[in-house]
Length: 463
Image 1 (cartoon, one colour):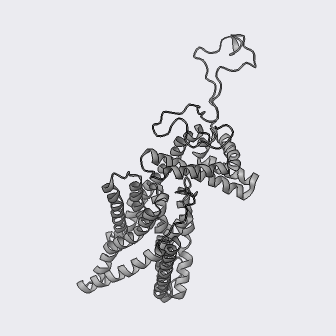
Image 2 (cartoon, rainbow, N blue to C red):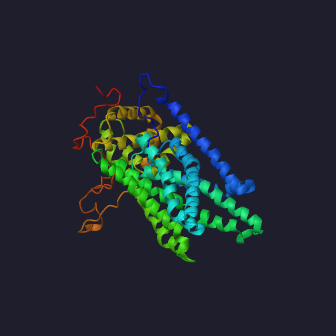
Image 3 (cartoon, rainbow, N blue to C red):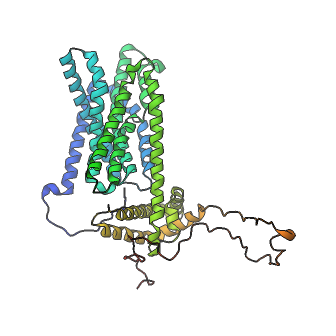
């Protein structure tokens, strides 16, 4: 995802009123607001005012931690906050409303048709709820994939969008469950650790705050892999999101049905399936993020050769530690505005690296040149603050020099210089390595990028 706008200002052209962005944003905000008001009324009706307030206070606790975790995963190429706000609002309002209405209607219909309320509840929890809830959450991922396609470029983007959507859904669902548990305790007089509220809080907020995000992340991974596929594989791009959605439904059904596996069925599913799955997906996302950093280090040297970047910048921009040090350096010497300028510089450089990679793979689109030019010009305008900070970060994070190796025959006559009559201040034949890999002035063989970039930065050194 890119935070720098890679598009120049275009001339005004006539559009119909329904094609204007402010109309679409207004309709979307209105629908989400109406969904929020309806879901608020439904939850308050089921839990009561006091139960709603207690549930709200307890359900909000894991939300900042989950949002911060997904935002941390997206630090390489952070996306716009408006996408995350939409996803959270969709999960908390629209998806939750769809789930409550559809689950209630389906469960009542099954209970009426079979005259078995207990069986209808079990079937609704293990079959109906996973299908309805995962489909409702997947709708947000699909909307971002279709209408914010340039912000949706890979697996990490899919994980972040799906995870934030599921976090919003779990927030509303936790309000309902915790508020209902509090109402039960008010009727029975229970309180403290032995109360239903405490048990519900422990299971839903302490033990499994990642449950809903874990399910929906599988859908996001399917969309992320589809985003990496080329335009020729239309069938693959359609089947991968569907496969991810089916896996999410299956895992959700297993989680909801764990109570039917006996007294310790929940703990068995949690320990044998949920925790390993969470660990595996966490490793996958972190590994994917490291690959993104590798892409930055591999693609940016082409712009070093063209003069847009300094030789140390690909190294610094390909390290999260160096990026953080650069922002801290800019904050100390140029204040908050300097730190924000360095952050924008890092985002634009990452975007141009990913854009170049997609261009080499034939997935950049017809406006590749315009977008690349706009990003490079943004880098050029921010270079005054960003370059000193990145240069300092590169030197601060440079690997230590390797120790001077000893010749296999050893040093005769007491030292490396005594045997050959070299002075003490003579340069050593075993010089330490440079603090960062040097880049040659000769362009590498790349059929996509010419030896000299067609857009050289302005300056007296260019004709």
